[in-house]
Image (cartoon, rainbow over all chains, first blue to last red):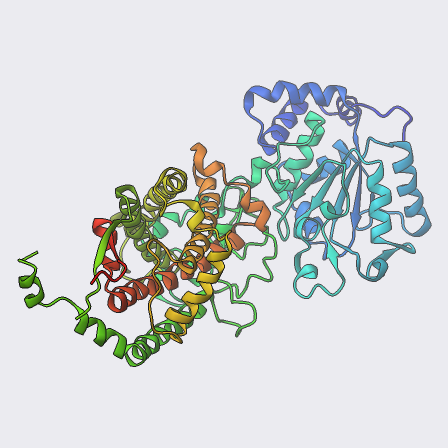
Amino acid sequence: MNASPLTLWEHAQSQGVSRRDFIRYCSWLAAAAGIEASSIGRVVKAMENKPRLPVVWMHFQECTCCSESFIRSSHPVVSDIVLDKISLDYTETLMAASGFQAEKQLHDTITKYKGEYILCVEGSIPTGDGGVYCCIGGKSALDIVKEVAADAKAIIAWGNCATHGCVQAAKPNPTSATPVHKIISGKPIINVPGCPPIAEVMAGTIVHLLAFDRIPELDGLGRPKAFYSRRIHDTCYRRPNYDAGLFVESFDDENAKRGYCLYKVGCRGPVTYNACAVTKWNNGVSYPIQSGHGCIGCSEKDFWDNGPFYQHLASFPGFGIETTADDIGLAVGAVTAIGIAAHAVTTNIKKRKFIQSEIADSETADDLDNKGGA
Amino acid sequence: MEHVSFGRVYVWQLPVRVYHWVNALCVVALACTGYLIGHPFAIQSGTEAYNNYWFGTVRFIHFLSAFLFFFNFLFRIYWGFAGNMFARWGNFIPHRKEQFTEMAAVLKVDVLLAKIKPLPSIGHNSLAGVTYFISFLAFLFQSITGFGMYAAMSKSALPRLFAWIVPMMGGDFAVRQWHHMMMWFFIIFSIVHVYLVFYHDYVEGRGTISSMAGGWKFIEHEKNK
């Protein structure tokens, strides 16, 4: 590590990159971060003047699918980001160092770049029983994240684990798996949910930090608006089938072959905010709905608990596994109808005398005549 | 022979009656379309999407009714301050001792049928009042969750006012689930409400059903013969 790190442009020059290629690369970055063409100049300027961004990438309770997704990013090519434009100083999965060397690397980075580095967190943090369920280098994930976050410039929470807890936090959440934003406060936190998030979305988020030196515009759940402001449903190419009332009834029917809407077989597209239908996966090849399977809502909170995945409404807690609110409602409605029938019968039995006497008491035609026609 | 004489009381003012029927129509439309949105029928297949728009129309009716329902509801909140003594908020929120006593009495006379003689309330009885207050809370809940979900596809300001509910409840799925569950409150409420109106009209003969058309109810005078 240099005492005065090279700027990105200087670094690129040292790699033999031409000015033309540099500008082209800046345009890629801008496009990936969802920045409009007129602002490319700002990206170029940032790249010319900024040193490489120091990043530490922590792995806690996770399956590394976020990392796997990230390294499949095609635009901008991830090697360009990881190796050239950011300085990924610590990441358990990709770093060469191990053991004490690795721990020293982490320590060096967070002391040397105090207040400068970006902390990426992959995985949730177990807080149950003093945090014993996830320990690295003899320290609990809880202690590590607090220590590393203390001097971070900003935090990126990768994936559903770090943003919502994902499967570890599904009921009954035995390890008390907790997302980053519930542990760390007072730091800007960017939530990038998904299981995993789309590679281009991850790259785009980093690029934004890199280019503008500030966090992208976030929504109410701390997600970058550029990628999470629209529902899968509203961007889905099968949407016209929904509006036309054309639905797949089962996965092997004629409607499925015709590519109708998967709403009735449990697609979570209408309640899921992500860029899948726009950016797609694996270099834009496809996304779940295009491949004939409903969205499971992997970027939404508690998506594991909102099952079954192949049912439009979740099962109602405390009843059978496939009992929905509608089944309960219908039962309550039936009970109400029976109750009313019973009440009506009882009324006629118990209040019969009263009603009869009221009728007997009522003014008859004779009475009215006596009153002079009233 | 002793006769009971009844006097007319103008109970439900025109705005209350209009509110009631607009609300009733909206609730029926909202529940029907809402149920369909949750469980669309497979009425068509073997055709292409460009030929049809029925589900879009169902949703459109739902949203249209929702706006009407909401503004009608807002009007009723206002009328709770401006209306006559039977329309005021004091009838819905029990705050006096007599109201609680009346609730217990209504329970005995009309629900448990343990006592025979009807109670002489004119507007809402206290138990009905508090039930309506709970239903107003349900209106509020449905408005907030409904507009909260609608906000994502709308640029207009009104739905956006309620966008905060989505992060608060943990996402669209949870909001939709609760919104859908609450539909059943409206269905059950309507069944019980309609039955009780018939019940009161039948047992008491004071024009409960017609009161929501013409506004008049009848109360027993002191025995005058």
